[in-house]
Length: 84
Image (cartoon, rainbow, N blue to C red; front, side):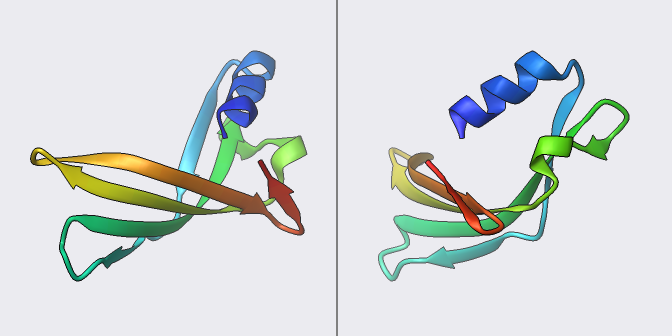
Protein backbone atom coordinates (compact mmCIF):
# COMPACT_ATOMS: atom_id res chain seq x y z
CA UNK A 1 0.00 0.00 0.00
CA UNK A 2 2.85 2.33 0.82
CA UNK A 3 4.41 1.95 -2.65
CA UNK A 4 1.03 2.40 -4.32
CA UNK A 5 0.38 5.59 -2.36
CA UNK A 6 3.90 6.95 -3.04
CA UNK A 7 3.49 6.41 -6.78
CA UNK A 8 0.10 8.14 -6.77
CA UNK A 9 1.44 11.12 -4.80
CA UNK A 10 4.36 11.51 -7.20
CA UNK A 11 2.14 11.39 -10.27
CA UNK A 12 -0.84 13.46 -9.05
CA UNK A 13 -0.73 16.69 -7.07
CA UNK A 14 -4.12 16.32 -5.36
CA UNK A 15 -4.55 12.76 -4.08
CA UNK A 16 -7.16 11.57 -1.64
CA UNK A 17 -8.71 8.36 -0.40
CA UNK A 18 -12.42 7.64 -0.25
CA UNK A 19 -13.34 4.91 2.23
CA UNK A 20 -16.42 2.74 2.10
CA UNK A 21 -18.35 1.38 5.08
CA UNK A 22 -16.21 -0.33 7.72
CA UNK A 23 -16.94 -3.70 9.28
CA UNK A 24 -15.31 -4.14 12.69
CA UNK A 25 -14.99 -7.62 14.20
CA UNK A 26 -13.81 -7.67 17.83
CA UNK A 27 -12.11 -10.75 19.24
CA UNK A 28 -13.51 -12.34 22.40
CA UNK A 29 -10.64 -10.87 24.44
CA UNK A 30 -11.59 -7.30 23.33
CA UNK A 31 -7.88 -6.62 22.72
CA UNK A 32 -7.77 -7.65 19.05
CA UNK A 33 -9.91 -6.51 16.14
CA UNK A 34 -10.19 -6.93 12.38
CA UNK A 35 -11.46 -4.03 10.26
CA UNK A 36 -12.60 -4.53 6.65
CA UNK A 37 -13.53 -1.76 4.20
CA UNK A 38 -13.27 -0.64 0.58
CA UNK A 39 -11.03 2.23 -0.53
CA UNK A 40 -10.65 4.18 -3.77
CA UNK A 41 -7.84 6.59 -4.63
CA UNK A 42 -9.02 9.92 -5.99
CA UNK A 43 -6.98 12.60 -7.71
CA UNK A 44 -7.13 15.97 -9.45
CA UNK A 45 -10.71 17.19 -9.31
CA UNK A 46 -11.88 14.19 -7.27
CA UNK A 47 -12.21 11.77 -10.18
CA UNK A 48 -10.93 8.23 -9.81
CA UNK A 49 -7.31 7.84 -10.90
CA UNK A 50 -7.16 6.34 -14.41
CA UNK A 51 -4.72 3.58 -13.39
CA UNK A 52 -6.77 2.80 -10.26
CA UNK A 53 -10.28 2.73 -11.62
CA UNK A 54 -11.24 -0.07 -9.24
CA UNK A 55 -11.96 -0.27 -5.56
CA UNK A 56 -9.52 -1.91 -3.19
CA UNK A 57 -10.76 -4.40 -0.61
CA UNK A 58 -8.80 -3.74 2.59
CA UNK A 59 -8.43 -5.86 5.74
CA UNK A 60 -6.51 -4.57 8.75
CA UNK A 61 -5.60 -6.21 12.04
CA UNK A 62 -5.42 -4.24 15.29
CA UNK A 63 -4.21 -4.90 18.86
CA UNK A 64 -4.91 -2.86 22.00
CA UNK A 65 -1.62 -2.00 23.75
CA UNK A 66 -1.49 0.35 26.75
CA UNK A 67 -4.92 1.86 25.94
CA UNK A 68 -3.95 2.61 22.31
CA UNK A 69 -4.86 0.61 19.18
CA UNK A 70 -1.86 -0.43 17.08
CA UNK A 71 -1.97 -1.69 13.51
CA UNK A 72 -0.60 -5.25 13.31
CA UNK A 73 -1.39 -6.21 9.71
CA UNK A 74 -2.70 -4.73 6.48
CA UNK A 75 -3.78 -6.56 3.33
CA UNK A 76 -5.56 -5.29 0.23
CA UNK A 77 -6.46 -6.38 -3.25
CA UNK A 78 -7.89 -4.73 -6.34
CA UNK A 79 -10.51 -6.15 -8.66
CA UNK A 80 -8.94 -9.25 -10.18
CA UNK A 81 -5.41 -8.33 -9.06
CA UNK A 82 -3.58 -8.86 -5.78
CA UNK A 83 -1.54 -5.93 -4.53
CA UNK A 84 1.51 -6.72 -2.36
